[in-house]
Image (cartoon, rainbow, N blue to C red; front, side, top):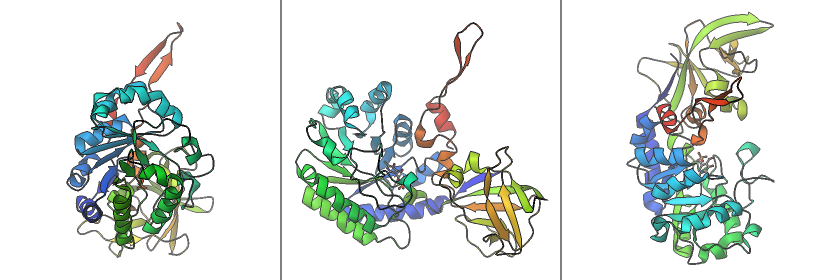
Length: 396
Ligand SMILES: Cc1ncc(COP(=O)(O)O)c(C=O)c1O
């Protein structure tokens, strides 16, 4: 069987680095479960993380159970039943729009946990300042639905709000965060400085565990913010906890030539198991397990050697790696190898633990729609309702 293989020592190495940043800066570092929520790995992160960043009720429950600590929730919109449950155990609930805040304000403010300060409420704001280049991952693109722009705050009753949250980065360095914070500060600095604001959550997208990330610059920025604005600072990276910790191991099911291409059919699908390969799109690093190999994927096993694949034509044997599905475009890409591929060869697709696994299960923990049938008598019968147990059982 194909296998997502995650290295616990690699997760721990990332977690140690992140915990060092937390210790040196005084920030609280949460695990964004939207990026990595494999329960078999969360136990490794638990001693190092301050808690979780959840995209809704399912991830919040998962985080409370498997990570413990602080539960920070942000969703573009909350259902009534979801909010009612979150009020019982979350520590931060952030709202995405003024209508959401106005809709849920009185319910929240009436709750004893809000009144006691155990649960704090915040707003996700949009500093309208982009540092990224991929629109799909940029919450500050024109027309974005994510976060409240500065002008919308004027005239809004913010009684009960004690936090500000922004998330704008994706796979970026400390300088991009500094530039973003300065843009945020210009627009929201006076609100941040007011005594009502007690926390600032600077979202995710910080590539803190990459070797060239300037961790000292991040630490200095956080210290400056804590000192100047007297707020608790939170970061909620996802990718940084899980980057370079996992691979997808696949087998070659068939090799053949057709219409001028050599095809290798694998037992995994881009559409079903690595949707970002098609959505983003991106080209994963690929290795063939072969005695001649000298490559180093995120997870290597004793006795195995990994021969890196190249661009098409760069090495003698080029193949189109495709899925065993009916979708014509379910293609992982064209890759060349030093040796011909054969049925049963093992192929390793690199860096597949962050986002890939969650996208192939329940992305963001969004509850799965019911499956229902319209019967001949005109009645609808729910054939299957999915719940939290279905979500958690698929995470492993
Ligand atoms: C609100 C929010 N926080 C945190 C993250 C985690 O970002 P990353 O995995 O890039 O660190 C995301 C990612 O989309 C997000 O939308």
